[in-house]
Length: 442
View 1 (cartoon, helix red, strand yellow):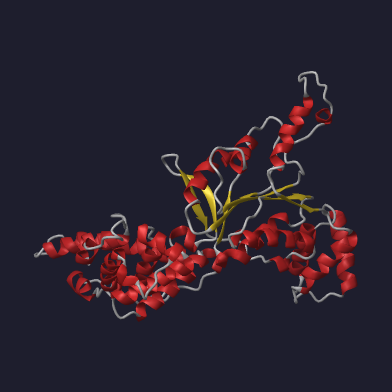
View 2 (cartoon, rainbow, N blue to C red):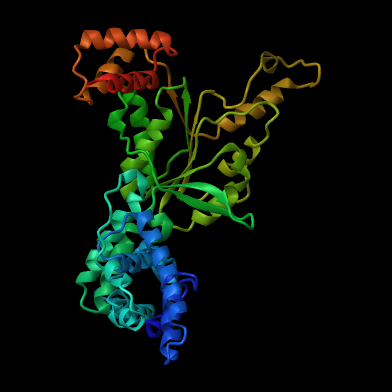
């Protein structure tokens, strides 16, 4: 194993702290220790790495041959100059021999072919252990999809199955480059959505959100015009045409956030990704854009329930990023925001007067506030549904749940009483009512 890891060139950036490199180092020391004087120590170190491998497998729902899934995971997530270029332009297999970098990567793939099929029997015999035999024929416990990263799991297990059919390093090269072109590489290729965190040094990091809603636009009953506006703008974006930043505003509980989550699910396969950013993180916007501007994906920076009080100045960062800063916002980044406020910033009656006790030109303040929402090219209004529309939403949601067998008249009567008691008539209230019905259905 250590001979193959030592020969890696393009993929030599796999960290020394990885399970692969740790095991490689242990096996190297074992071969040098002819008398096996540190046998117990080797066993303990190997068990530590086995535990880490099991942790990774649990996180991503791997099963069967955990070692091969792990090698496939390393290949799928390793961002290097070759893999990043592959996700953008792919490899022409008819002309692949014309590029020197391909020959370098093929050498690496031959090493990975050996690592993928590494025979652990000799190690187990030397140390009198059976842990590797269990890992290479592992039967995992049944798990709910919400307990592991399904998006990564499905792709990596598919890649592992394909690599298992390869005959040599050339086969690895073909399979892997096709995988990069289809799905991409690293966290952006394997995950749908991300949140902003900071590492120990304070640097901005985009961390994958492992469990996202599987809602679709069909689940949102009504608002057909609003949904179509969002679809048209998003389709233009993912297809590389000009598109606008979007503001979804209106009454609470009308499906603004649900629409954006559904849009992500609808266009994920076409390279759409979502980055969730909160108001206190606006200072990180420039760093976020710097990290994604050269990747082969379309990124929506998503700001939910966006609004500002008069004393809050974070909106100035947002204005500069959207339009107004010296650096042009890249074509692969849009901003989608939801808000209950049409103009995002709190307005007062004094805003409408040019006279104020503390400001000579109050209209200038009003223009300052309006200038933010003006930077959203598309504004979509989600108003609270009428009673008739509310009834249609309730019946539409009930139809999606066959366990609800009550007559329509009784459903609507109960829904009306529920709305009166629980905050009025909106899509959210309708959904909460349906959940209530399901909870009492025997």
